[in-house]
Structure formats: structure tokens, C-alpha cells
Length: 107
Length: 160
Image 1 (cartoon, rainbow over the protein chains, first blue to last red):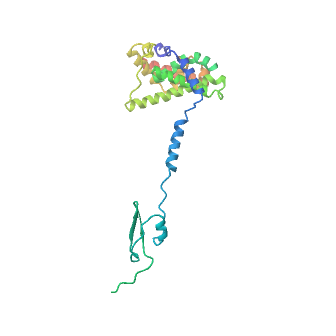
Image 2 (image 1 turned 30 degrees about the horizontal axis):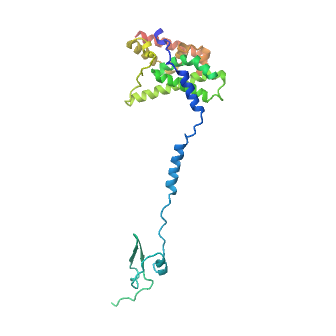
Image 3 (image 1 turned 180 degrees about the vertical axis):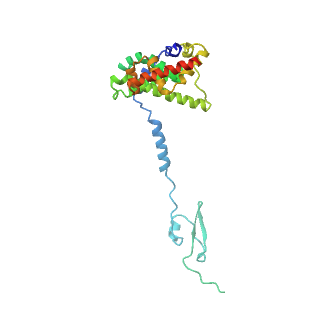
């Protein structure tokens, strides 16, 4: 039975290690919050990152507005009601429809 | 400092108790250190009169947790931590040859947890029944009966 309860010596330096760990915990952790702050800031930045404003919407018949924003104006008198034609500028596109219905075609 | 005095006094018995849970010198030392750190962190809540019992209880719980973690590591194939070389003779070496070491470990590991706690605290830490009762929160009479049961089971295992 004696071998079961043999007295073992712990590795040396235990008290020094304990002192070091207590000292480590005692000292203010000045920069320990920095990674968390950086992460939170990155997430916040992604959430509020300025996105391009949505393209303004005007009536296609508002020719002064079209001219003001630099779109080329339709040169014909418009298409038939319900039909569309595209005016393009810099990759954006809008459609205009003539406000007046053309006379019905003769059968 | 009171805690450092307590460390000098209790490091060895605690190490001996914890070692029989984790069977690894480095793990045992880590557990002992962590137990003292927890007492230190809770120093405003722990009464000096109950610090020893708190320390033993904390060390036993940490050792049981470490043992479970090591078993899981072993189960998932990470293996148990090997005994690292140190300037001290390995604790296992002090327990005799490999065959003896296995016998001892098998006998102690074969004890149910509650019997093992009692026998470790009485035989390895040298605590009285009253002190063990305070650590484990059980009556001193239960400590006595569990100790008898544990020793009987150990004898039986060693005689096999």
C-alpha cells in the first residue's frame, strides 16, 4: 500500500511562477482591449460605409431635369404610349414615354 | 503575503493529490497554480479560515476537469500529454518501475470519484477527517466510512 501514497516532490519554481502570474493579473492590461476595439470599429465601418446615392428619379417628360443632370434629350417626339426607349449615360439607364398618345394608326 | 505562505505550506500536498488525477507533472503543477490563482482572485470573498478548504476543493474540481479533458483528447486521438523532461526526476519514476506505476495507477483510477477524493485527502494530503469533511461538505463519519471502503478496494485491486 505504501507505493500508492508515495510522497512526490513538485517541480521547482512554483512560487516564482505563481508570483509572476499574480503580478501579470495585477498590472493593468492597457492594450488588451485594443483588438476588440479594432474589430468593433471594422464592423461599424462596414455597416456605415458610404454607398453611392441612388440615382435620382425624374419623370422622363421633365426635359429641363434631364438637361440639368446631363442626360441627352430624346430627339424625336417620343414613342407611342406604352413603348419605351432608353436614354443612357455612364452606365445608368432610364426610359421615357411621350406624355401624349399619338393618333391611332388607321386600320 | 498570506497566500504565498499558504503556497509554501500546501504546494506539495496539493501537488500529490492532483497528480493522482492527471498523472502528469506539468498538468498537476498547472492545476495547483490555477487553484491558488482562483483563491487569490476571490481573496475578498474567501475567509482566511476557509481558504484551505476552498483551495483543496478548487484543486480537486480543476483536477477532475483536467482529467476529463485529457480523456477527451485521448479519445479523439490527440493523445495524452507526454511527461516532459525537467531537471527534477519524473514523478512517475519515483513511483517505481513501469509495472509498479501501472499497478498503482490502475488501482487509484479504479476508485469511484468520491472514494478517491477522500483517500487522497487523508492519505496524500494528510488531512484529518474533520478537515476532509469541511473540504468535501460531508459529515466526518462519512469521511471515515469512505476512507475504509477506498482502502479496502485498493487492497483488493493490488492483490489481484
